[in-house]
Structure formats: structure tokens, C-alpha cells
Image (tube, rainbow, N blue to C red; front, side):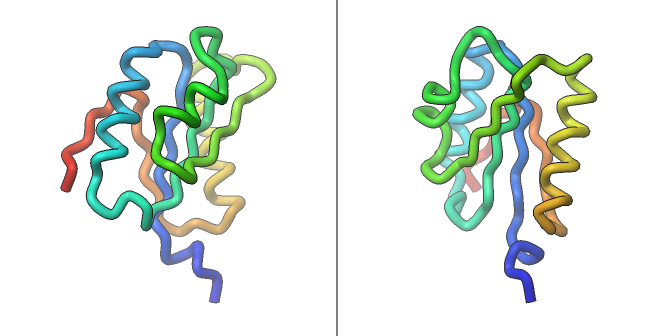
Length: 105
């Protein structure tokens, strides 16, 4: 049995809006048991920050994927993220906008 089918995967598409992304990341870091989730940040080739910045602000172990060029819009980037998660065989995933603020519990 593939353990990924039992993990909750959290996907966050990002593009610029550095301050909003930082607030989202900080709130995610404070979520109880966040380490039990697989987190992937799918950056749509932002110009305001780089992969190293994203690694610093998101919880340890977060996977960062930066696209080589910007897609045609947020809905396309979100679709690409969903394809990525389903190809990895996750059966449960949550897509969060990069400006979401989460409650710690």
C-alpha cells in the first residue's frame, strides 16, 4: 500500500505578492502537527522572491517547485499543481491560495 494515499498534501500556488505569501507561510508554520502533511509550493516564476526565500519562510521539508516561465494565469498554475499532486498518487490534497491565513488548530 502506498503511504502517500493516506497523507494530506497541501499545495500552494504562488506568484509574487511577497508579503501575503509570507503571512500564509507563517500561519502554516504554526499549524499543529503540520509536519504530518506533505507541503508543496508551486511558484509560477515569481520575480519578487526566489526559491531560497520560500524555503526559509515555509515549514521545514516543504518542497518548492519554481516553473521556468510564467503560465497564462493563476488558474493554469493551480491546475499544474493539481496534476503534480495527482501524479504523485496523493488521494487527499488541499489547495490553498497564497494569501490564506490558517488557524493553528
